[in-house]
Length: 140
Image (cartoon, rainbow, N blue to C red; front, side):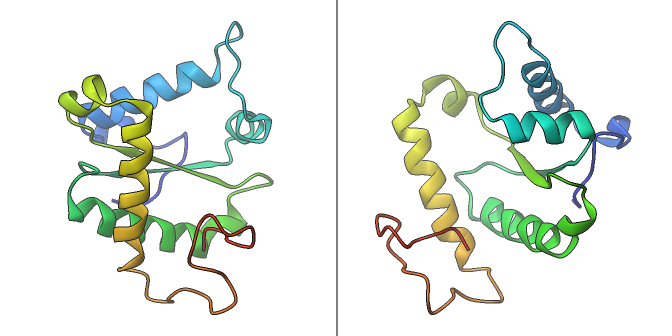
């Protein structure tokens, strides 16, 4: 699936995709519990967010899908507006969504990013450390 924006035809999305987007949009517009990242809220309000969907984050296929979404975003982000932000929703099985702790999701996220890097055609920049604990590290 390719990246889409807020005006995308959601009738063509799978039910889990519509549900994920609807929950996200409700979170963005909740005045009693504002989203903590101001630039994301601004990007949402301006329609600058780009959305992508990937499968079960435990499967290697999700890493390949994420890599494709990241590559597309890298190519198109300058046309996405003032605050280009990529939001990726994953088809998370109920046992993960209901049973994982924040720490387990954090570990799953880093595993997913590690697997995703295998699909990066550009490779890792030589001047950026591989260790995320290094103060000079950044997500490339």
